[in-house]
Image (cartoon, rainbow, N blue to C red; front, top):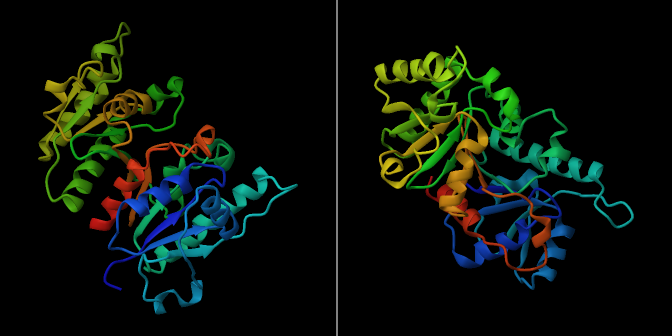
Length: 320
């Protein structure tokens, strides 16, 4: 198979994923075969509700290498999702999502594919506080300890040093070692996948990189981490004040802005790019991408959801 398939784990049964998936595959023909991993009954129900017609190609997981796959029909691996009293019970939903991921991971381990997209997932109910996010859940499955979240846009991307961590715990987690690790991951990922050395800006942890306390993390930790990585030949500088680094004249100088915590960098990038960005997990032995939004149940059935982020995710994997 010339173009390795793109595996798509649909995720939550009640989400906007199917609506944006139908829009995405109508918008463009992709070179790589798309394989949807989800429940056949849920898919058919969503096709009916969205008035979307396309033939289903049900795949046998034991014969995947024998198929001559294309995107003339929807390639589907059917995963059972039980209901209770005609409703999606959390217990059954979580098992369904877990089974979907287990199959996708198995196919990646068998080198059938190295491209994975997962649809929106309710992290609170699925992860049950075992992991901070899906990034950490997938990293754990591959025993990849050194990973990082990249919200990618071709003009500007961001990466948080800490991900879904409560603010009061951020200062305890920040270390010179962790910052250096994230800088290295970004540098390696860009050189491998985009063939150039990225220009990385690092924000301070405190407002204006200042502190009224005796111990200033930006002086004692962030600045030293940046200096040591700079000596290694990485194009990195900082710390910069987080409230000004995203001004146009400042952000235009960099490819990636590395922030100390989730909302410090994700809030401005979502304001700037909206749906024109994707979430990439760097440091995995394969490419894992996800649209940059959640299940958004309130938008179900309205046919108003923007497919741009999923289209960008598919385009990215189609080229790699």
